[in-house]
Length: 463
Image 1: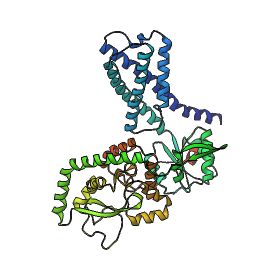
Image 2 (image 1 turned 45 degrees about the horizontal axis):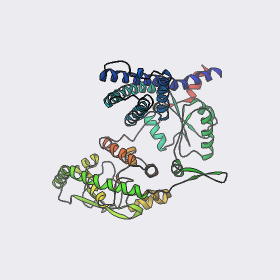
Image 3 (image 1 turned 120 degrees about the horizontal axis):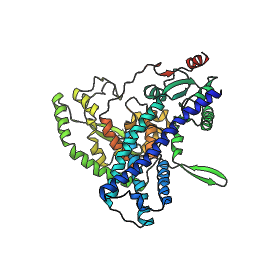
Image 4 (image 1 turned 90 degrees about the horizontal axis):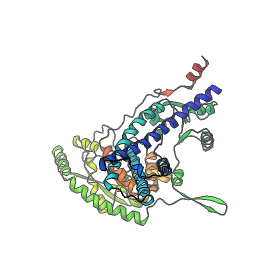
């Protein structure tokens, strides 16, 4: 028992060791960047010599650590390259701002702006190199971690479990929530994943246990949990309560969003004129049908409108089948249509929908009324996504794919509405460019691949 505890403590200490190494190296790299910039601009002594009071130097270093820790710069979770670069740029800006304040207002020393520009460029470069180095250490630790997914049964087909089988960086173990050894398995795991099928009572117990044991828990959120996430807490008498905002944008947000939509849609139409010409020639060369295709969709508050797209299917494609989703290798899709769909060229005419005000650049994808009605019966919260204008792209499009379920797409859409900001819109637009060139992942997987076997481990321990 004591051996297991010591082994467990050693495993959990690795992230801390890496974070301490990164913290020390970061401070040294910042000092080095100031030294190089100082030698480049003034060709003299180390800049911190200006501050004769060594206690003040220590305060600068302490502020560095506090700021970057508060900004979660040393977060051990794997992050995208975009997120890492953003943290590096902002962290460097904050630390330089503090340094400038201390130099100008505390020591009454004025330095050249070029000094800070050079230092800032050096810091960004050195921090990127540092992040590459520490990410290699992180990956080695993550590969040795054990991820436990608690499901209804071993052969569960939940979206979370399917994704874990494909993307899990460490070892993956699967256990049923009614397994008598569940607590023991949870104790051995590093990360716990709770699927939507887990009961609220068990979810509460697992979260409480993992919080005490310093384990990370991943939970598939319910709709109300998404809404509560950004809610404000207040008090009525001696009772704490959450204030949940509605799924609507404020007047200011709507005005800013509409202004940006108009400017960017005009810009999009102008720069995509050569693509328009290519699409027209391609469609007309394959058959003599119309270039554009209009279809009724549900817009803001469910108001119907006609979405405009380049025609990618044969004429009257739904004449015999009615409203159905396009399938892989659909015989109704033309050759040029297949190319336009894979490159999203067929979506370009929707810039006109944005310009006319029926759509936005970013928002939930516009769905056909018949499917809105169908999904709303199955998921009552589906109506909430109609509280904003539909978009050409959205959070569900950049985070999900064609095989993502309607329920998960709905959750992405509601997360977007709840967390709406201009910065989030810009982030989604940039990510959309990357998604256009990304091929969808294969759907199938081997159910046994990469699944950790607790029974085998127990047998090894006995031996």
